[in-house]
Every structure is written in C-alpha cells, then in structure tokens.
Length: 548
Image 1 (cartoon, rainbow, N blue to C red):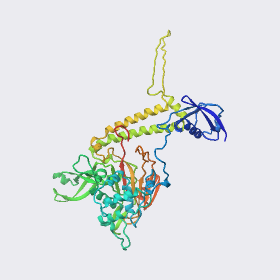
Image 2 (tube, rainbow, N blue to C red; image 1 turned 90 degrees about the vertical axis):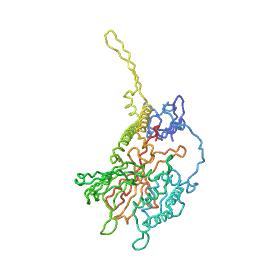
Image 3 (tube, rainbow, N blue to C red; image 1 turned 120 degrees about the vertical axis):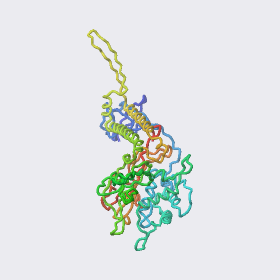
Image 4 (spheres, rainbow, N blue to C red; image 1 turned 30 degrees about the horizontal axis):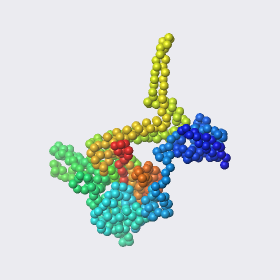
C-alpha cells in the first residue's frame, strides 16, 4: 500500500492525513469523517478546483506530499457526537425468541394450515396489519372464554408478536366454527373440513368484532364500536322508479342511509379497472312494488359515499353461484387496481366539498417535495454542474445596491451587487416553504372530520394489504395474503422511518419478502393468484406544526 501525507484544512483547523493512493475518494472521505465528524455525504473536498467524487481513483489525482486540501461541510444533527451506548449491545443469538421477533426488520410469524384453512390464515394476516386493531384487542376485557372469537383473536395476535415461526391458530379456529357453523362444513366425502370463501371469513370476523370490541369515545355517553369507527363507511342512496307513470302519479324518490364495512367492485364484461367496478357497484337495478302503480316496477338505486373510514375494504365480486355445477364459480377477468386510490368522485357533494381542498393541497406539497429531492439527487450525481447551474442565477432574496452618477456625458453609471445562496441555504429555504405548506394543509382539514380520528380527511388511500385467490372456484384453490412492510420504528424517539416499498407474502406458515411489482401482477386474468380483497388506509396528513 502506497500512501502520501497531505494537509486537510477545515474550518480553520489543519489535519495531517495519510492518503492510500490505491483507495477511492469515498475511503478518503471516511478518513476525514473520523477526524472532523462531518459525514461523507455532507463533505465538499476540493482538489484542483473540482470536487472529489466517491468513485475517484486517488492514484490519479496527482497528490504531492504536504499538499494543502480544502474541505467544506458541517456535521448533521448529532453527526459529530460520538457517545457511549446507554444500553448494553445484545446480539441476536443471545436473544429470546420473543426478543428476536420484535427486532426491527424481523420476519413476521406465519400461520399453519390445518387443511383448507388458508382462507382464514390470509384474512388474519391482513387484519393484523391494522395497528389500531392490535391496540384495541390488547385492551379487550370482554368475555374470557375459549369460545369467544374476540378474546381468542387477541391471544393469537399476542403469540404471533413473540415468534417468527408458524403459529397454529387452532383456538381461534374452534371459536370461529362455534360462532359461525358454516366454517365447520365438511368435505362431501366426509374427510376433513371444506374450503371456504375468504371474503365470508373477513365479513364474519368483522361482524363479531363490531359487536364485541368497544373503544372509549371521550365525552360520549357510551363506548363506540371499533369497527364502525375505523372501518365503517356510510352510503347515502336515492331510490327512484324508472317508469314515467310513477313520477306522473306523484311518487317521490326516497333517500336513505346505510352503514357498510366494505365497498364492492362489481365485475362485468366492461370492467377493466377498480374504478369501473366501484361505479358499477354504486348503481343498482331492482324490482319492487310501487305503491302508486300498485304493481311490481323497476327501480334504480344510486348511492354515494357520505362517510369514509380510515381503513377501507374493497371486495372484488369475483365469485357467483353457477347453477349447473352447484358451486361458486370465479370470474377470471383482469381488473387492475392502484397503489393509491382517490375516492372523492364517489362521495356526496357535501363530503367532496370538505375533501377536495385537502386532496389538492396534498398533491401540491408532494410536488414541492419531489422537486427538492430531484434537485438534491442531481447535485449529488454532478455537484460541480449543480453549483454552476444554481450559481448562474441570483437568489430570490438578492441584494441590489444602485448608485446612480451622472458624468459629463449624461450616461447613468449603475453598480449592482448580488448575493447568491449556497446549496445548503437554498435547500433550507425550499424546505421551509414545504413546512409552511404543510401547516397550511392542516388548516384546510374540515373541523368535523378532524374530530373523527377514524375517518379519512383527504379522500386519498394507500394500499396496505391484499388477499388473493388462486383457482377456478371459491370452494377450491388456495388463498394467500400480501401486507406492505412498515418503516422501522426508532425505539428512542418513537418515530417511524421511511418504508422501502417491499411487501410480505404470507403463504400459510411460509413468509417471504417480495417487490412492489408483484402486487401489480395480482390483477387476475386467469386461475393464477388474483386480488379478492384490498385493504386501503387513509394517507397520513401533517399535524398543526407541519410534521407527520
């Protein structure tokens, strides 16, 4: 290894550094980090008028012994401080099974299949992705019986949080079969239990939780249902007779409200996207007796959403009863769905009026954040060009001083002085603008929606879970679940870091990590895995101080 001793000057101090000429610029920056506390990505090391890049070959920069090198940059928050850990470091091999399962990034527990119970396993995994549900179950003090599905679900989720192995959900399964005998149906040959529809399991579990799982509502006289608060949507419907004779006779349209736990996506020959199916599901034709005509007549029921929950369940209506074979057949058609769902167009005028200002401001803030990130990446990839591009334009707060003098020729002589911002100053200014925009966004949230922590306040949802089905009918085939990975939570600050965009795939007791592209492939189009249930969560909005 050949080394050259140079002198690095930083903030008035000089450091003697032995440079390994066989290494790269990145290694040299880490040497400077150990001396100055300035992280490598915050350093600007100048060599012969240009900035040192991470991949620079140090043997080709022409260093000479004793050469003076300039370095600029300041440590990030806490970057220069080296402190002793407050807790003793514990290695994974020394941890208990429960401690290892609760570490950041640990693979979550799977669920064992007891023979055609994949429909239940996939349902339980997606429901477990709702943190508020887990918290509510921990506080559940209701019936403590082996036959109570709610207490058994609480116990099951507690066990799953303490291991990375496959858990047998036998106690919960038995309680569910007692509460809902349909799940105890046997195969036609009498051997083992029959396969069931995951959507029916999802609906029955939510029905049970709706009755049993209550949460405090503060000043309210009685506790509220957790399911109604966080997963219940409200539809406002108008029922009108299609026949002109009814209208002429004075029959008025009837308006009603109903609470539901899911939004249906109806699939027909024209359905290509989730939006198409939702539109189909909000318009319904039905036959009923007209009091005015005194006979059966055709009516149209048109519905709009008047309350959006924080967690929205969308059900693809892929199964229908096929009389010839006496079973639920599957609609194979490909229906695409988005990772972010905008449902504002399906809402009542009153709710739209409350949602649109917030939704539009969210998109404006996102664009500003995207522009800042794009500029930051551009400067990082080509810092010299980035500086020139920015330095060629005066800053928005440029200081101009004009001295006007009139010499003998009558011409006016003007002297202009301009100040330019550094990259850090420019970036700080933009981030301050984004922070101000987030604070403004908070003020746009409708006050009634702001008081309802279980409601969506923007009309925008992000996809968090998917239950899929593989096969040709609901009573056969195989169910699996996909759940989006959450960011790692800092144990000290409690803040959750950025997500990596990947997903967990739960195939009974087998759990693996997959890329986001895998989710896009679940649109259907054959007997392969296709989405049956989607779980969306309202996008997070900033608080009054502009933070998330």
